[in-house]
Figure 1 (tube, each protein chain N blue to C red):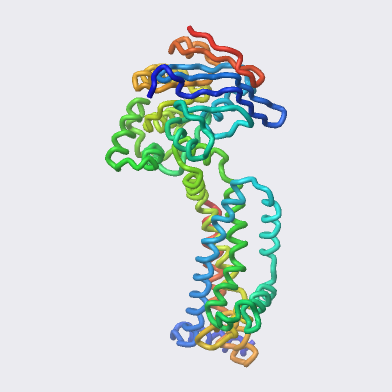
Figure 2 (figure 1 turned 120 degrees about the vertical axis):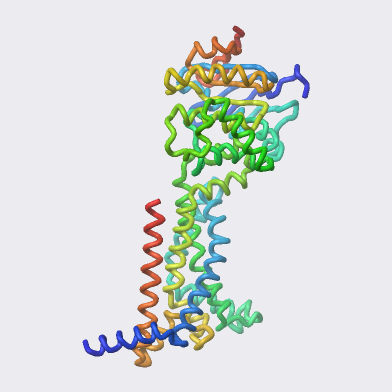
Length: 222
Length: 228
């Protein structure tokens, strides 16, 4: 891993969906850095995150992860193992919180003991240790968001994408996210979160990208 | 009326005395239906998942074909397969005509579109976040689709049960391809048709009662699943 080379890089990327066009001339996310993405509703924040999460393909342009151009599905799948995304309204598979967190760990072939250890550790980090055996159906929206973050950080990926992590979350829960995002830096994780909440971006000291009408406008460092 | 009551009484005696002819006919029906269902599930579930979760050229044509096949009369399916497997047909050398194997093949042809269509509906109606969630957690496209199927498992089970209801109750395929050979290819439905025409109304009624009971159980189970 080369620390001064971008972890993920988008060059001349275009993606058209009906009338909407997402255009990124150049976007570089460096290892172990914090980034925030802001812009008005419908500007393309979620679309950009989905592109970065390799859930969708660009119509043109180049996406490189760890220096390798992602063309084939095999390379994309390998890179996707290093990228996790928490959607604004996360989906949970039927079952318990623990089963949901262990899903990705099981896919990575980790032994049962290690799965449980990582899941417990992740739940502890989002202050939901007691929730391991809870059914996901009964979670409040704030709890659900935290469980989704726990499910993502348990995988120890190198890039974590958070789609509006503090939207519709009560005041009590919001500080958890700021604290958690900063903690993730210690794990050498690159974090990019979209937000309308300027205070969150300022609190964690993230580099700020702005996007408007599908165009990534610029970057500023606080 | 007395005739009906007497026949019903005899039918109940045949059922509760575990009459060997009744049992063997029920066994042939259940075995052929279950085997055809396994084949239909193995083909129909992946096909329904494919059609429900991918967009590709010709998808609409495939769905229209499946819908058409669902409405095919059983005798037409029987006729087609009879032509293929009769002595002069392209697969005549296999010697499968009038064997339980050909009933299984025919019933699988009937059941596959049902399983595929119901699975397709379950997959299309599933939460759109399932696939991206599985993918972001590290699933391959195939693993993500397996997870999608797990999430809609009640819909898929309903598909299999609906197909079972169709094959256990059909006459055309079993009659034309099995030949209604006693103790070998005689299923409940073909036996009911034959025994009634022979005047063995009580025997036919015993099988009819078992068929009705099976249909009732299938529908009860289906309702239960649809409420989940």
